[in-house]
Image: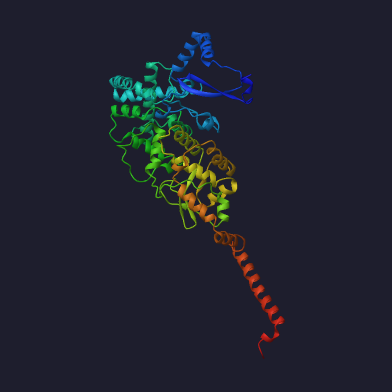
Amino acid sequence: MAESSCDAAVVAVTIEGSVHGISHQTQVSPHVIVDVAAVNGREVRDLDSEWVNSIKGKASHEPRKIKASFSSSFIHRIPPNLRHFDKKTYVPQIISIGPLHYAKRRCVLQAMEEHKWRYLQAILGRNGEDWLLQCLGKVKQLEEQARKCYSEEIDGLDSRSFVEMLVLDACFIIEFFCRFSGIISSDPGDPILNLVLCPTVITDLIMLENQIPFFILQELFNLMDISDSSLPEMARAVFKKSSSLRCMFTESRINYCDLQCHHLLHFLHLNCLLSFENEDPPSKHPGPIPCASELQEAGIKFKKGDASSFLQIKYREGNIEIPSLEISPMAEPMLLNLVSFEQCCPHIEPRITSYVLFMDQLVNSTRDVKLLSQKGIIIEDLGSSEDIAALFNKIGRDVWMDYEENYLNSVSERIRQRTKSYWPRLRATLMRDYFNNPWAFISFLAAVVLLVFTFFQTFFSTFPKFQLQK
């Protein structure tokens, strides 16, 4: 038959108009005629129209847990892949600010709610009840804008509850700043300013999940009769009194008038950048660098930097200069929340992430921590050296960034080039093994002198004609 004369392997069958009228060719076995249009037609007619409409409806729904406009929001719930530490790092322990932990106000964080109302009453006593009406009206106008600041829909709070929450939380923060900085006199027995509670309150105020928009704070502050200071200056005074946060602020005065701040954690982040000057041009990522102890063995020295910003890491002629950083219980949530903020907001410069990843490479073990502590670079106030090593090792886990944006690329490149040089490594080995103390140097010198005398003795014994004539 004619069909049998065809090649037994395959034949090409052209299927016209199967998808958007475009001609496709597929290979099928001989004697098989495929009517794709007919098959597709029967399958489409057999579909349940209610099922199809249900899928269309689900596809048209706007995401609520994580908004489609996620990148334009700046108050986020931290993703699970970044939660490598206990809940104290990311979850408020004593006070809830904003809607993300609102449910805890009725249980574990209920005690501080009473003090929020007490602070609001103190403000009303100074400003009058008309001031409260102005605040509620102003925040009501900004409600829609404030809701857009969060990366998820705030479904659990209606309009009144949401506005009330913003007013109450903003008033507490402003009153706390006023009392802490001494602008307003406070009761000496105020438990919020107690040495035990106050550090925990400040730590809770810098958590990413525990924020309200800064423009809400600023608007209510503008309605108060406080002319001695500005809100950013008060925040700076409060945070700078904490030893762990002091490294975030430069000694020079900063003009906060044009500062576009999203919330208090962003305020800390901006102060880091304002006190930091990057002297190195952008460069490509050179790859990883060895840990601190290995760099020391390669002849590279570590020095405590004198820059005003802890981000100002420099490399000069075999010396790595790193400003000191106090690793305390408050420093841990500060660094982790700043890194999470940069991870969740792509438009934020990843300077803290770059710093953390650099330190993660330097610190691999307790030996590295002790070396940096001896140089005054790390001030241990967290616990043991093991805890600090674990902090830097975990903080860089699952952290993603575009390495082309790493401001320490050029520093890392010069360090890597130095480690490839032979003579600095040999010199470091000699200094470590033979010249690390006076007795080792004397022993080495005596061995050299003995070796020289032995050489001459052997030489003159072998070649007596070279001996000096009497």
